[in-house]
Image 1 (cartoon, helix red, strand yellow):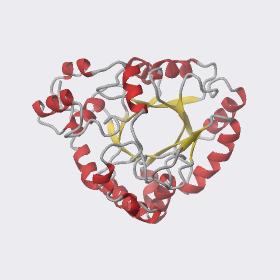
Image 2 (cartoon, one colour; image 1 turned 120 degrees about the horizontal axis):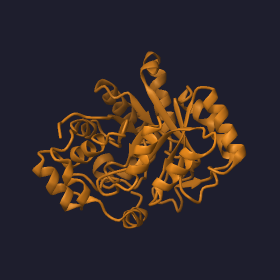
Image 3 (cartoon, helix red, strand yellow; image 1 turned 180 degrees about the horizontal axis):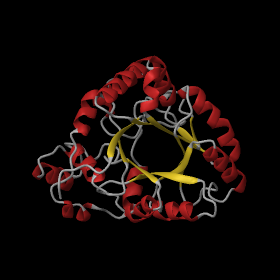
Image 4 (cartoon, one colour; image 1 turned 90 degrees about the vertical axis):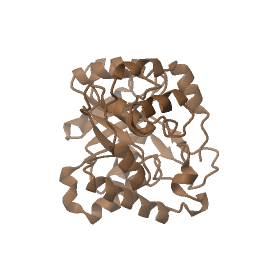
Length: 312
């Protein structure tokens, strides 16, 4: 396989918008948790967004539940109003941040996929960003979510789509493929975008993502680094070894594997420092993609292990 990238790297703000998240190694990345004030993380987010812009990144991803991520992005945009036409901005609704800016909150985010939640969070998103997002997704749709059968909500989403916002879903859990296919096959489906977890350990959504892409959906890959597990020194030695053999850092190898998928339009970097972003942007397609399939683990195992990762 050649070194050509199929998709493009975007910047996801999940890990920079709030003091605690499930990404490994945050003490090394962000320092003492006591110093992670909103003002401190806003400054760091702005530095990261500056570095991303300078490096040519033009896709930014946020969500209502990512702490102050939308506000950080909105205040950065306010300082550079001429940049907005060159950017694609995605955000998500359906979760809200309830961690009260503490590291040890019992609950950090709350899920609700109701029409009332959409009606409340859409204007909050627009206000925080200072602009409507280009893409607006239901956050983490799983088979038990009522979102795909709620006729009132689906009509609201159709109206938003008719207003020019591309509506979609994000997915999580071992049944991602089922959810994607179900959303795509709804009569009069308002959806045109999916953001799904795919990485070299969790490859199960690939067939459904390929079908969505073939149907004209915009496909965004999240968690390509498995919440920090696929980095140099991480716990997955088989991936570390293969990355080394391929002449890449583990994070670049993992992102390159996602970029190589023909259905991937954007692959998100979750970097929280300019140095991490620079390392991520060095990603290239793995030399031999035949080595990727054996790295996959059982989806139920993957998501069970993810569920017990500590907020740090």
